[in-house]
Image (cartoon, rainbow, N blue to C red; front, side):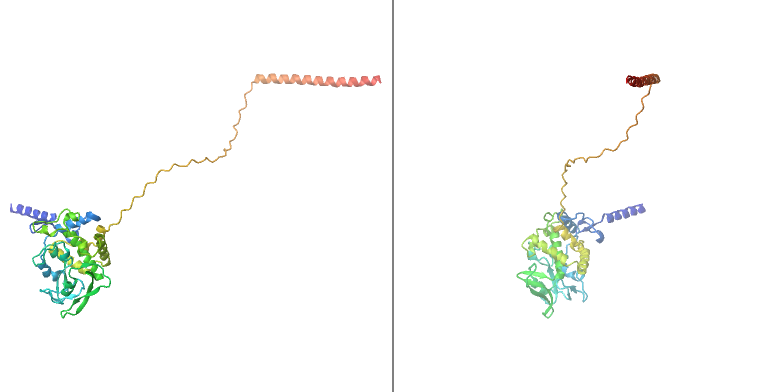
Amino acid sequence: MQRKFGKILSLSLAGLLLCGVLSAGGAVLPAYAEEDYYAPITATKGEELLGQIHDLITTTHGHYTTYADCRDYGHTTDYAEGGKMSIIEFYTHETIVEYTQNGSDAGRWNREHVWPKACSNNLWKKISNSERGGGADLHHIRPTEVKMNSAREDDKYGETLNGSPVYSKTISGTDSQIGGYHAGGVFEPLDNVKGDVARILFYVYTHYNTYSNVHGTTNGNTDSQTANYFGTLKFTNVMAASSEEAAIELLLKWNELDPVDDIETTRNKEVFKIQGNRNPFIDHPEYADMIWNPPAEPEPEPKPEPVEPEPTEPEPTEPEPTEPKPTEPEPSNPSDGGEKNHAALIGGIVGGVCGAAVIVAVIVFVVLRRKRK
């Protein structure tokens, strides 16, 4: 009995593993290995693809980190050589050794909302260590040098003309490395960071818009708490652009300009281990164009209308020479032939006699005439 029970238990556990489910915070969520994470994606473009990606990254988001977690995990997700809390700074890619607690220590790092709270349509309701949701998502929050962070403030992203350079600082407060340009309330990151910015904004927009806004079917584990994480986001909330279309066009340009690098790939894997979901726009940067700039469908060529052929005069043809048919001689009657020969013979004799008579008459006539003379 014990052996039979053990066999049943083993089969049950194997079945659970094959079904690929896990429990996270009381919710049963699909568990995907890294290599088959995107197996549920079947759409190839447009709204359908956007909705499927939303459903995937929300249903696999098993653990929503706090804002405090973004500090504690920083040395794991953005690891750099140099010490326990050393990180790779977001805008400059320089190594910063220490985290600052008070938010004002130059040369140290703190947590940057790439999509600022002031631009979140009140979805990041507060900035506190216990805050969860889009404002504390490890795919979203990046470590930034303190003075660089404050110089960027809540400015929208865009491209500037003759913007002032913005520098990170050393611990002594002097300029360290340039991290972008600032002009008229617009912040322009460096070219080698623009793609990073674009792919984070694509992720935040796709994840934290409620499913009906992005053609999805679910917000994942939407209990009474997580339901408040979703709402309405627009790219013009965070991009200095005249329209949503113009904002998307600029982000697509940045996505192509600055391809995915090792920093993004490494932290995407680390966040996946912590939260259970991935940033699809890092694994598949082509998704952005497939969603927001799909190739136009080729118009079907019209079927040609049937054309009546014009009547053509037949070319004159010479008749082929034909050989005359041989004629059969008419059959003769032997009796008829005999009669004809007999008549011909009599006629010949009569003719001969008449001719002789004429000759004799002429001779007599000549002799008599001579005698008279």
